[in-house]
Amino acid sequence: MKSKHPYCPFIPEGATKLIIGTMPPYRFCKTPKELYENDVDFYYGSKDNYFWDLLSQITGAKLDKKNTETAIMQRKALLSKLHIGIADIIEQCTHINGKSIDDSLDDIVLKPINELLFHHPEIDSLIYTSKSIIKHIYKIADKYHSWDTPKEGNTLDTPKEGTIMIGGKRYKVIVLYSPSPSASRKVSYEKRLSQYTNVFGKL
Image 1: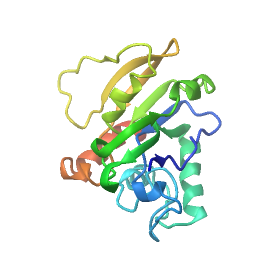
Image 2: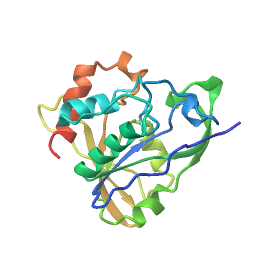
Image 3: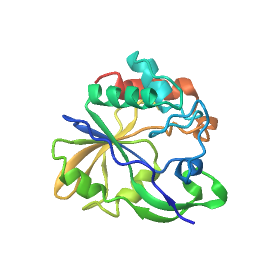
Image 4: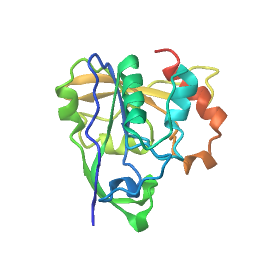
């Protein structure tokens, strides 16, 4: 059975940036959902995902890790304050063997991000939270990404940056380390914190 994405895009008023991920874990997509007490029923809501831990540490925002409406509203309030929307590129897929890593997603149906952007012309920057977004975005983009030439002295703390044309409009693109627990085996929390601070600490 295909997993259907459980959340609508969240685009607060005045958003100029859009965070784009892939798909929530399988247990978030089931009906009914199988959530733990310290999950949050929202994007990157798994108790093991580092996304909101990183943003909380960077911004100083109080973000409960509880399966409550208050925790959801805290995250929406932070995104609104930062003028950032959030969506995923996948609308439906099969989680092979119930696994949630991007390589285990099959039978993928993409969300029409190009239509979403058309209806929110104030958005000018896209923030990918996975390298997998790069291959998916090509199916709705005008052409391939144009990546910036790395500057001398750049380190892994600096995110990959470039631009992409979608619907005749050029968007700035930032590619971050994935905040998923599986990715943490390759990149330390400290390295991820440094990279995310370079992006979200300047907003």
